[in-house]
Image (cartoon, rainbow over all chains, first blue to last red; front, side, top):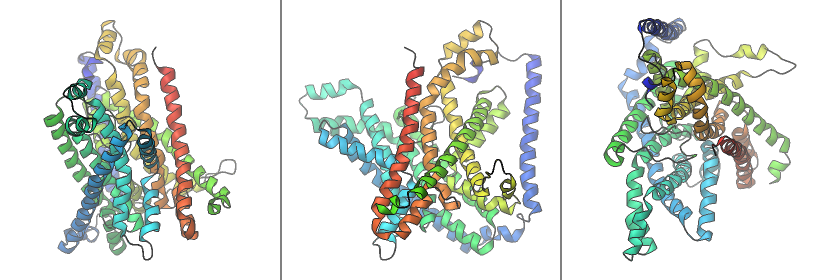
Length: 288
Length: 228
C-alpha cells in the first residue's frame, strides 16, 4: 500500500506542520551524530594513531584477507547448503513416510538450534586437540546445517509454487515421478528461489562473524587481532561493520536484480518461519 | 547424561538467563520496532528515510558486531553501564553485562520488527484505506479503526519468526560474559569431554522447547484472530 493513500494531499497548514517535523527530525539526527562525534573526540578516539592501521598497506592486506576468509566461508556454506537443502527439501516432499519424517526431523532440529551452539559443539567434537578439521570447517559445517534446513523449506515452497497443471500435464505425457520432479518442478523452483538464495547468502555472511568465538579466521577475527595490538576498539568496530554492511548491500542489490530478471514483479517466495535473521532481497515483499 | 542431570539447577539457571534476555529484549524491540515502523509509513519523508537508514544499517550488520559496539566500543566512549548495578529493587539488581546484551539484541531485532510491522500494514488492501479516507476519517482514525486492526492480524506470522530468531540470537551473548544456555553448554562440554553429544542434545532440546512454545502460542493467536 503506498503511503499517500493513508492521508490526503496536505494542505498549507499540514505542509507547515510537516516542515516543522522535518526540521525537528534533522535537528535530532544532527544532535545524535554530533554527540557521538563529540564523545569520540572527547575520549581520544579520533586521534590519528588510532586510525593509522587502516591506512597501513600491510594491515589493509590483513583486513582484505579477513574479508576473503569471510566470503569463502559464506559461499562455501551456501553451496553445501544448497545440496543439503535439495536433498532434505525433496525428502520432505516425498510420498514415502520413511523418507518424509526423518527429513522433517532433521530440518526442524537444525532450524531451532542456535548456530553458535552448533559451532561450539562441532568445534569441541572435531577441532579441539587432534581433531581432524580446522575451526573454519566447523563454521562452514554449522552454517551448512542451519542454512541448508532453511533452504530445504525454500525448495519445498518453490516446488509447491509451480502451478499444479504443469505436473498434471507432465504425468499426462507419460513422465515418471522422478522425471517430473527433475525436469519440470525443480528447474522452475530454482529460478523462483534464486533471489531468496542470494538473501540467504547475507544471512550466512553475517553468521560467519560468530566464527571468531571458535577462533576461525574472518573479519571479526581481524577485529580481535587489530584491537589487541592497537587498543582502538571504536574505529575498528566502525570500519569492520562498514565492510559487512557494504558487502551485504551489494548482495541485496544482486538479489533485487535477479528478482526483476527472473521472477518479474511477483512477490518473493513466501516461506513461513524462514529467514528469521535474514534480509529480504527486495524491500517490498517479504518481512524478513 | 549425568553431566547435565547432576547439574540440573545450573542447566535451569542457564535457560532462565536465556529466557530473561529473550523476554526483556523481545518486549523492548517490539516497542522500538513499532515506533520505527510508524515513522516508516508516516507522511514526513525525513522520518521515513531516517527509519529506513536505521533498518538498512542494523539489518546488514552482524549481531556480533553490534555486541562488539555495546560491550567493547561503548566503554571506550565512557559508557560501561556499570551504574545499573547500583540500582537494587527488592534485593534484585541486573548486571551491566545483561544491560549491554539486551541493548544489543534490542537494537538488532527492532530493525526486523519494524519490517514485520511494515509488511503487515502493506498487506492491508488499498481499497480499505481508500474507503476509510472516503468516509472522512483522518490519518490517525483510519489507522486506528481500519488499517491497524487488520495489519495486526497479518503481522503475527512474520513477528513470530523474528522473535524465534531472537531466542536463538540470545546465544551470541555467550561471547560477551553472559552465563546463558550456550555459554553453560560450552563450560559443560569443556568439563565432561566424554559426554559431548548428550550435553549438546539436552541443551538443544531446551532451545527447541522455548521455540516451540512461542511458535505454538503465536499459532493459537493467529487462529483466534482469524476472520471466519
